[in-house]
Length: 586
Ligand code: GDP
Ligand code: MG
Image (cartoon, rainbow, N blue to C red):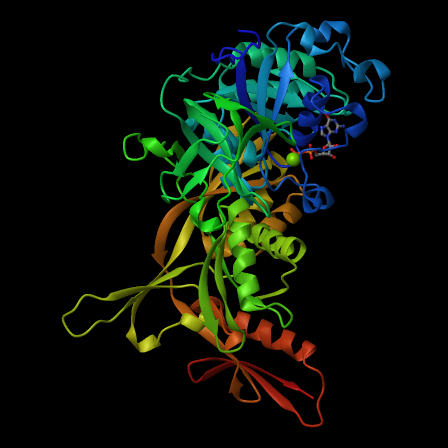
């Protein structure tokens, strides 16, 4: 008696959703408006793209990490004039909505903000399994783009309710009508289902909040079942060890409960549980349907994997874990080696910690004659490589040297007479086997789907043919856009495909990829000889047809970076004993 002890155990009031869109279409800005309207963040603490908390995200203007945030919102509270159509962000009225506490049961909205760049799609796919609905945002000045399509497919596969929204309607000259029609056609829904907003001015955003409360279903009420928490992200804290972000799939979890990681078998105590608003707010208990965090005290990063299920310790063995995530396949491999003022153990620890918050990064120890002990790391793309190197430097003070990016080649080697060939995977020129033993080499191919303006189609055809792509087939996307689908070696895509596509389409073209498996390639190892000595760290893996041009390109580059000497130094590119190109440093 006395204190109202019971928590609301139903899930009726909960809505879990994410915002998906092509990069720069306004996800983080829309999230800002939600945070303001729901008064989750005090007006004086508000800043643009608030959920992009990493300095790196703010500097580059891109979202790298998914970020969950919980908001309270009572439908109808906007009637008090909050952020109405075209409300100015500096408007005093917009900054002081009626407190939601006046409403008996405000809705709990859990938003997961996600990145848009293709290299961070693993973050998106994890967000999708934590929610029931998705806002599909399309920038009216850009129209539908490749990541719009790719993310839509992911959301459909996750069986989410999708709310189509046209953004940036405030921009003069934006094709709001056209984008609205294209989006309705893409989803196969009536045009009245599509909403219009300006994430910048806030116009249409309250209506969007109401729409998502009405259209997205509450999570299934399973609070009476045993506790299961799907881990969709994690971070490391010096004091409390690994903090996991969970979607409570069933049951409830109270503070101090004994818990276990179903997959890794690590036992722990729920030192603290709580919700993210977006800063952590401790709670007594997390219940089914909620999204929150659990501080576990676990110190070994490797025992708290994203995709694992958190259970009560007593339930281990009897309660089935939630199906985890499919681990992403890395596309690009790069050797990462410590620089002179970073030790190998420091690099190892930095990579292990980074893997906690970047579950798509893989790392295997390797040795290089020139660079010493390091790691062969797998990445989803070159932007991912760049971001990882930068995070190692900023968050762990680890300075590194990186090798040339490579895809993973599968090599079949002659076994003993009568035996089946041995198969080996090689990810750098240093691993290239003796050519006389090679039966066949295969390389990964991808299906590339490019979305481009109709006027740029000629340029895209040309790019695809230069890169050895199959003749594309096309799909219409409304009157101004087209999707072109072609098959390419992944090697061509990781090179500078993104930049070249942007250049030939005046910035409007975008693409997404889907793996197609391995196909044969006539691959050679081109060795660089400096003063007749092979320099292993400079050698390259190149298809036979491109070997001479590549060899020439590298020796010319080397000639320009090696300082003049008192004697001449020959620079040569060779395959086996055959010299393909030669330059001399005077
Ligand atoms: P994200 O990559 O999808 O998270 O996109 P951001 O939220 O970072 O927005 C990308 C850019 O578009 C930023 O410069 C925003 O200020 C701008 N932007 C977003 N929404 C609007 C809008 O409704 N109107 C205008 N004019 N600009 C917007
Ligand atoms: Mg963003």
